[in-house]
Length: 253
Image (cartoon, rainbow, N blue to C red; front, side, top):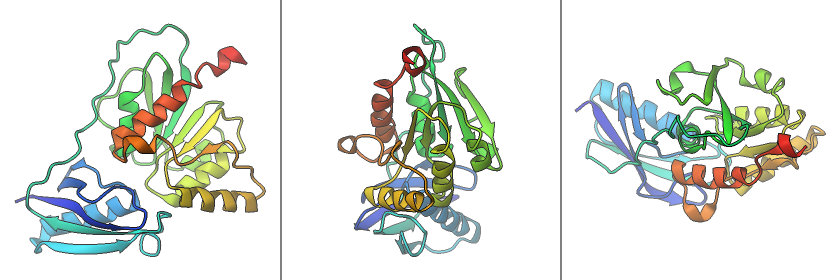
């Protein structure tokens, strides 16, 4: 069988997703998400090694901080096997023909992973003109709505240092890139900066930014609405609801 299911079976402390969350990995695709950026990258690599080598099923525990450099501070146990699991539904892109009643606000999305895709899929084209940035062109879907411009950028941080006045949402696969983007964007005249993460990540980033003489007051972290859940579409719903209340900055300024 040329596919492996990866399921979170146990969580200790803070983690990106809850026990029972699963994703399917094949040689060329992923369905669903276990979250966490670096955690998911490692899990996908291990699953594809199993597919290529025919290795037996396995259970692995990852300490998110020491092992993967994530700020969650917890530990996650993953089961890799060939038994089918339910996975999160793929996002459906918003209607490209939705009418606009006013000029849409610029929204820059950094990262084309699961949460970035969910935000793009759910964003109202009547409210937002989206610039979508990632350092790997293959992460973008093959079809995107008309109000979305995809920008492959080998050095996202360098691009952020020239970014325009806009709302910015940061969803990359790397905490280092997340931090460097925050450092670049707080020095720009941004409208808002939203950063995916936990309260621990917020505290660490803010402390480091302060140490560099940078003011992180404009950064919102965590984003979304915790009561809605941790799935990408749930994070997207809470984030966009918050942003929708702040649109129209150009018309109000």
